[in-house]
Length: 324
Ligand code: UDP
Image 1: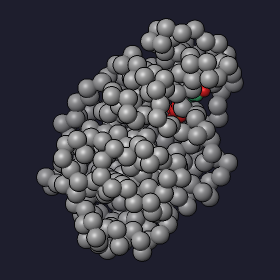
Image 2 (image 1 turned 180 degrees about the horizontal axis):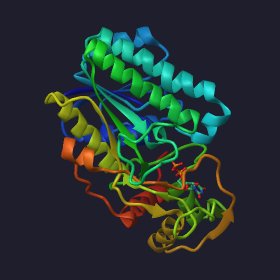
Image 3 (image 1 turned 180 degrees about the vertical axis):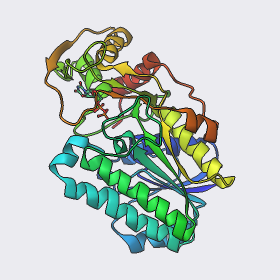
C-alpha cells in the first residue's frame, strides 16, 4: 500500500513508519518537525509541511496518491493543553479538519486517527470499554474527541472510512535501539524515571500517593510502542478489506501502578536513584486501563510485548544510546 503518515517523525509515528517500511509499504511522512526528529524517519520520503497549509497538503496527496492516511501529528501534553488550549484546538482540531478536507477532496477513502484514552475523562468503570461516556477533563482530550466526531460525520456524508485508535500509555522503544521517545520537555513517566536512573535528573517525583488504589499511586495501562505500531498496520488492512469504521482502545488491559513502574525500573537498570513523593498532578485519573476485547476481535490484534520489564528494558536501551 501507499501510506501518507502525518507526524511520522514523532514517537509513535516513527515506529509505525519503520514497521510499514519493513513490511514493504511505500510511505510518505508529512511532518513540520516542530516536535519530531528528521533522524527518526527510517523509511520513505519526508515532506516538511505544516498541516495548516491545506493547498500544499492537497498537492502532496494528489501527487503521492495514498491508499490511506495515518494522522499522528498533534500536541500531546495534557498540562500544556490546560495552560494554552487555543494552540491545541488550532493544531489538533483545526489542522485535522484541513487534512480531512484535503483527504476527501482528493478521493482518499481510508483514514487512521491517533486518538487517546483522554477522550473518556474520569472513568466510571474500569477496564474502560469504547462505549464508555466521553467526558474529557482537559483540552487535549477535547481536541481529539472533536476529531473523532468529525470522522463520524465525514463517514456518513462523504463515505470516508476510518479507525480511531484510542491509545492508553505508549511506552518502550524499537528493540534495535534506532528510535525511541524524545520529547522536550519530557513529562512522561518511564522516560523521567530512566533519566533519574541515568543520573541526568537528581530525583524522580511520584505525583500523588493518596489515590484510591492498592499502593496509593496511579495505575496505567502501558503498551509497547511496537505493539501500537502493529495496531495501525492491522487497522489499515482492516479498512482495505472493507471493515466498518470504528474507534478501538489500544492497551493490554493490564494496569501497573507508578510505584510498580519505579520498582521494575530499578530492577531492570540495576541502578538506585532518589524517589520523592509529591502532590497529585491536576487532571490525572486514578486508574486508566483499557477493555481490549474490541480491538482483539475486530483487528485480530495480539500483543507481542505485554511485559513491563521488556518495555522498560527497550526504553532503557534507548535512553543510554539515544540518537536524538
Ligand atoms: N507521573 C509521576 N511522575 C512524573 C510523571 C508522571 O508520578 O514525573 C505519573 C502521572 O501522575 C500519571 C502516570 O505517571 O499518574 C502516567 O503519566 P504520564 O504523563 O506518563 O502519562 P498519562 O497517563 O498522563 O498519559
